[in-house]
Length: 145
Image 1 (spheres, rainbow, N blue to C red):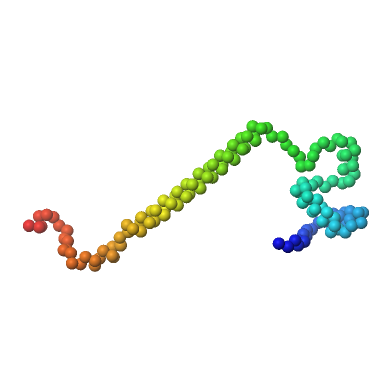
Image 2: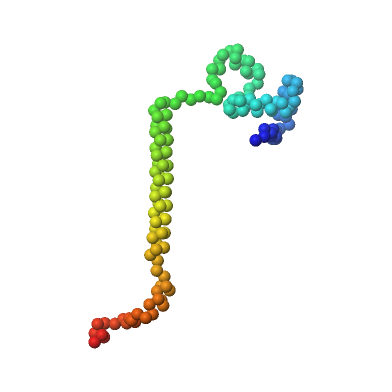
């Protein structure tokens, strides 16, 4: 496999473009480098990146008021987690049963198809095979005398 760079393109408003260009000029880097750095950060942190202005970042670290982390975390009761795990196990069990049932139905259909092929008698095949047998007549026993 080759490790080729790919191109990503998207549209932004003129105002945002100028802001991005200002960021690039301020840091003395190209506009492409700004995006490459952002994408590298995004990939390195598994998509969990929050973009904030530097002055807000400095204020947050100076005042220590912001104790929230990004992404936000929610505490879930253990009973909920256990119930979720139980339901996952039950779903896996039901999937296994469904697959087993499908295999059984397929096997029965194959047996039925094989059995049907052996028991099918075509009427055309019966005509003409036993021409030398006695002919039969529909009637009552009284007609035989």
